[in-house]
Image (cartoon, rainbow, N blue to C red; front, top):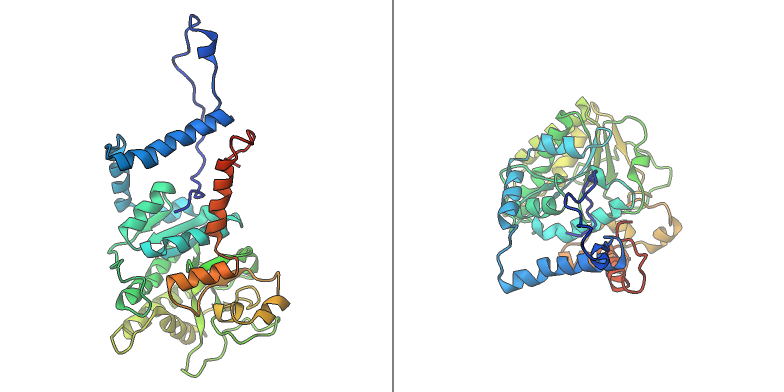
Length: 367
């Protein structure tokens, strides 16, 4: 996880209850500011010793007992508690992540932080390693809803583990809706280039994006598209926004029903998206649905494969989805090819700041 995950600010001042005696020399009374060049170098040296050298020397950590106790409490952390903690204006942004996807989580979060919405993010961890990893660095922003699926197979597209992983999604979202919150769901192989909340016009129940790569007119209809060859639509289940209405809850309940009716098997390697589309199609007359503009929320099959369209619509893209491709390395390479793998740039910023501390005493790592 990246170090950019900021905790909520702590307020208060630190004072020294044991001031230096007047009899001490003036040189010993000289204070070193934490924000001065010397103070920052000293702090970074201490962090280097504690975080790098001691673990390799086998020296037992004096903080280990406290750390284990702190991590253990997150097992008792519930979804209602987590949602109440992170929500802003009764709204949360949710993703579901297992440990193999942590690099993508970092990339997604960096992009969200640039739009100033990171404080309302809740990571639904699908294994305990992810739960502890996130909460150790960003307390309260991850929760695990038991039972945890098998993390070893959850990242293999088309596997039963992947189906089990994704099929939990509507239950999580329904629970959040029943708690009375607006919820935006994203897959973490997405990057925010703008603020999606500006596009949530009106007071519709469910907002979603089309997964088809065919170019639509800029003024296309916001109604649910007509069914395709398989008798259903091709709406993406990876970017959804819902208000806590009866209509949105109905769609989630129907999604759960459809997943039960279409279980995974070796001959039919199902995933959650067809069931989501059947749920939309079967409830369309009862629910207020809204198709988000394609130009702002393009599928990967359009954005990464139609550069003419990308150039013609430059500056209008809001969330880019790295789909229509499978495999971690392939997704990362494509993000890098399109300058959307932000993890590298973020690491360079911090490295530059550290390297130049001795040259630029005014560098402020807390900005």
